[in-house]
Amino acid sequence: MIKTVLSVLLLSLILSCNNTKEMNDSEQQNIEDTLGVFQPKDYVKLTHPEWSKNAAIYQLNTRQFSEEGTFKAAQSQLPRLKDLGIDIIWLMPIHAIGAKNRKGSLGSPYSVKDYYSVNPEFGTLQDLKNFVKAAHDQGMYVILDWVANHTAWDNILVEQNPDWYAKDYKGDFRPTPWWDWSDIIDLDYSKPELRKYMTEALKYWVVETDIDGYRCDVAGFVPIDFWNNVRQELDAIKPVFMLAEWESRDLHAQAFDMTYAWSWNETMHKICKGEKDVNGLYVYYSWNESAFPKNSMRMTFVSNHDMNSWEGTMYEQFGDGLEAAIVLSVVGDGMPLIYNGQEAGNNKRLEFFEKDLIQWKTDTIGVLYQNLFALMKSNTALWHGKWGATMIKVPNSDESEVLSFVRQNEKDKIFAVFNFSEKTKTVTFKETLYHGNYRDLRADSITAFDANSQIELKPWSYRVFIK
Image 1 (cartoon, rainbow, N blue to C red):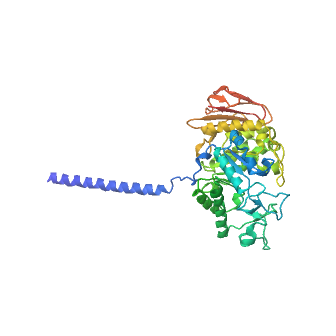
Image 2: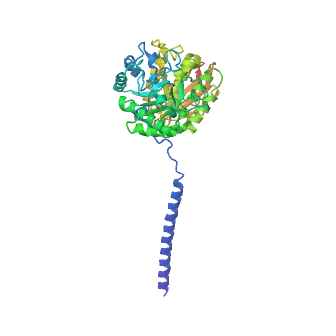
Image 3: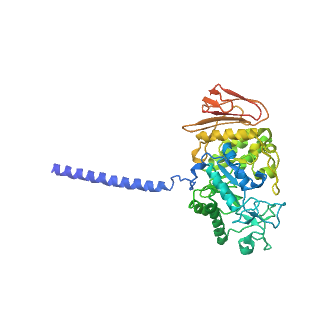
């Protein structure tokens, strides 16, 4: 009897344990199902072309780039650009320019008359194809400037599809509101027929000329869902690289590989003009690291066509801080841009609506960029997006005027220090992140850093140490 009772108790215990296990498994699955919605997801859904990971980008203003002002003449300079360290060539708009309400005698390239045309000022469609192929043969890539937000007053669409345009309160065509862009009129992206037309035009140039993507003018003035669809359609043809002239994290999710770092440029300008101190950069880098996704790219620059023509040359904009600003644009987070002529030390504001030649010569600025690009390509910590390393602030004894940081991964490391002031600074550093032996970028000597190390920096100078 006792044996029978014990057997029954043992069986009950086994059944109870099995039920508990089943319940625990079920509960565990419920927990996992519940937590699934809280798992972090990659914000960036697109795939960056592998070749963009350590690229430098060059803006080419075809009209001013050579005496001839043609694709053919620019093509002859591709070996020089390759030697400079350029990977991506951004051609400013290549289309025929509108005549109605034109500014100046030649007009703005951003006033497009026909999205399927080539500006005869620059050459022929075959000349453009030859330029792209020659760039590819040099191991470089070409993106076209695309103006989706507006057209010339006499664009062929005005007669064919006037309902595709935005209207003012009087029912008339209108330029972009609040801007002095009197030579253009806005399109209306509530029209699905316009979206289809513009998408097909963008696809045409990828198929016809084998370009590698686009730089999109005032991209934030065009709906994001349009760009998201465009990226899918272009990637179906070939992997493309997309640059947005805008500063918004939302554009990075599905449409654009890179956005402008306008606020970086503005902050650097104000620091170099004595209107801000280094705290302005802390604000920028904090937002860049915290608000923008890790696998996004920002374009850092000291000049472009807008800055040069309307705001001032790189010398006017940055003064004695120019070289330090250039160095930070390369070794800090961001893909560096050169606007044509910078490498030649161009010191004039290029006319925008007229012919205005760049005076080509060898210059220290070009040598500086060349050396920095070589470092950027070889040092994996300086690569872009997911491939690069996050900037980590190194606390120093004069943080309002001296910027110091490290970028490091399992393979490479740099320690960079910038004096953004008009005074000589002797600085010491805190914590241990910077400790170690480094090669000085400029002196090619070895420097050892420990808790007792200090650096003397002349006004507006910098030091970059490579480990």
